[in-house]
Length: 170
Image (tube, rainbow, N blue to C red; front, side):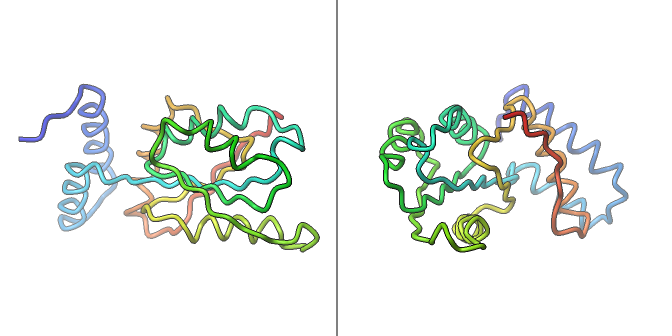
């Protein structure tokens, strides 16, 4: 028998109640129940980075640590940097095993530079759900059940994407 913690059990009950209120077919409900039991809301977060130290970015360490705690996988596309950004990221995330750096070498003069980096990161994700964040963005850990609920609804909605507005406070 599968043992669940109190929080996980409460989340599964919430998902079950929400699933029943979605008007799903019996087959969709069976699939949803199996997903509940497997806790299959697997999430990838992908970000891009380059010259974090030279450019004086702050707060990125906290954001990457939060991403590692939030997601099952964190993909960091790192464009060629002239500083020790690679070493700084590795030192920051040494205690986690769910992240990967994907090296890139795109010209910063390319008008599609940002899109190319983000696409490379996306192409390296392996989880069912993908969340794209900038290096200066974070998702509060207390919001994870809200995200899992939204992703669960997305899974059975027929939609392919969920646009989430964010406020840039930096």
